[in-house]
Each structure stands twice: as C-alpha cells, then as structure tokens.
Amino acid sequence: MNQDRRKVVPSDSALRRYTNFFTSLILMTLVYLKTGWNLFPNFEYMFALSANFPDLPDIDALAQYNFYSLAPYVVLSQLCFGAGNSTKLIFFIAIIFVLFCLQRVSNCNINYRFSFVILLSSPALVILLSWIGSYDVVTVGMILVVLYTRKNSWALIAGIVAAWSNFEQFLLAGVILALAMNIENKSRSRRMMTAAISSCCAYVLLRFFLYSQGVSEIRATGQMKLFENRDYFANALNSSPIVLLTIMSGSFVAIFYWVRVAKPTLKEVSRVGVGIFIIYATAMIALDQTRIGAILILPLTLLLGEKIASKCSPQQTQNFFRSSFLVALLTPPVFVWSYQLHLVGWDNLLLR
Image (cartoon, rainbow, N blue to C red; front, side):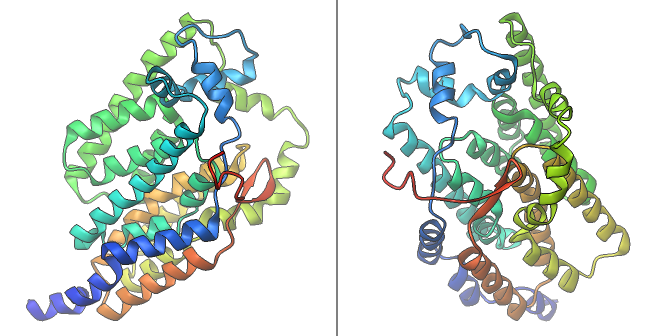
C-alpha cells in the first residue's frame, strides 16, 4: 500500500518546491507584471448608481441590468468609499487575497495541490486584472468558498453574497459543474446545494425589492433584445475561434493531463464535453464572451485538477506545474469583448 501511494504522490520536497509561499509570490508577481491591469469600464458608473441606494435613479431599461450586481458598490458606499484610488486598491487587494487563499488551500491539501496554479494560468485571472473594480472578484471568490470550505454555513453565505452580485453566472457555474463532473465528495455536494438554494432565495428577494423600486429589466430579457440585431450572430460566428481559445487557455493543460493520467471513460469525457459546450454557447450569446466563459470554466478546471492530483506520478506532477507556469507566463493577456479582441493594458498601473 505504501508503494502504491509513492507512485501517485510526489515527495514532500518536490511538492514544496512548487507550492511554497515564496515561489507562489514570485510567480504571481511575474504573472501580474506580464498581464498588466486595467480599470472596469463601469467602475464610476456603478458607484454613481449606488450613491443614493435604496433610492434608484430613473434610468433607461438597458442600464437596469446593473442593479443586479450593485451590492458590492452599495456596501463600499455605505462605508464611505467612492470611485477613488482607495476603492480601486481595495478591489486590487481582493484579487490578491483570493489568490493567496487558494495558495493556502493548495499547500495544505495534497488533493488540491494544483488549484493555485490552475487559477494562476486561468483566463479568469486575466479577466479580474483587466477589469479591476468589477464584481467578478466577488463571483470568483464565492465559487471558491463553495468548493473549498468545510462548512455549510459558509456555503449558505456565499450563495447569498453571489445572488446580490452575479446570480446568473454563479448558479450556472454550479449547474455546469454538476452536469459535467461526478461530484464524489458528498460534503461538497451538500455545500453546492446549500449555496444554490440560498442564492435563489436571496435573488427572489432582490427581484421583489427592485421591482418595487421600478426596475423591470433583467439580464435575460435584455439579452433577448440583443438578438434582434441582424449582425449579432454574424459577429459571433466570425469571432468564435478566438473566443474558444481565450476561454480555454490554461484549461487545455488540465484537460490534457486528465485524459492522459486519469484515463476517463467515454461517458466521463462526454460529460465534460457537454459542460464545455454549454460554457462556450453561453459565452457566444453574451456581449463579454471571454469574461463569461472564463468564470464558468474555472470550477470545472479546478475539479479536473483534483482528478489529476489523485493519479499523477511525481514526474507528471512536476510536468503539470511546469506546463501551467509556462501558460501563465507566456500566453498573451487577451480577451474578447463585444466580439473584438482586447489586450489587457496598464491604464490602472498607478491606480489613478
């Protein structure tokens, strides 16, 4: 039994080489410097909407979508933070905090040892850095809480918080994960269900409240109006290859090693394929393609990493780390938004 364990679990020294705090800090800094960062386009606008909350300004229907992601800005406004440098820095620190929490999880649990490097090479991190000040950091953070906490109470809170920041994406990520993967951990299954129920309940309350304030438009109804544009699907088709590449990005490494090491059955491959197709299809009908797809595919990639961790030999473990690091450091920091390719910039370097 001990011999079998040595075959699939790398030595402590090999593991520490890739997961220790200082190595993680250096790699994270290099990725940050390579990627650059930029400011969420609607940063000031979201704070303007939240300034007089709960009295909502009279705005056009299209802008009403933003009310369903207003909670982070309302909280900061109540704490006397506005659309200034200090608030930008808070969002930037939140991104760092998410990464370091996952680094801690990866370092403390051998089954999660690939989680940090997966996020480091994920397009989700590119999105967080490209839109500093966006509620996406809340969505990603709550997804990670549900996946890695041991307490149902934390999952319940995560669902409530996500419902008041980005309900649709949070819930869809969980549904896709359940469809694509066999959740063997019963405790995790209960946490996912708890988060889903609490999120739905909180969202219903939010809907009732916003309707009482005169907000009638939601993301789904607004999305349907976009389909009336004849060029909408033509633009989607023309940009489909680059959208797929920017969504998958570092996930290619996890999928490759999953097929090679875990040797999944045809049914398992089919389920993962269905999950990726749903993610891709959802991203293609949205205006911010890579952003949607990157967040939806993150939990799926993290679970694939867990499947690999239980099967990898020491050499395969090191190769996985190296491959992921190369993806994180060498791939161009690009994303597709409104069917156009964008490079992550340095406009917010000084948080001005």
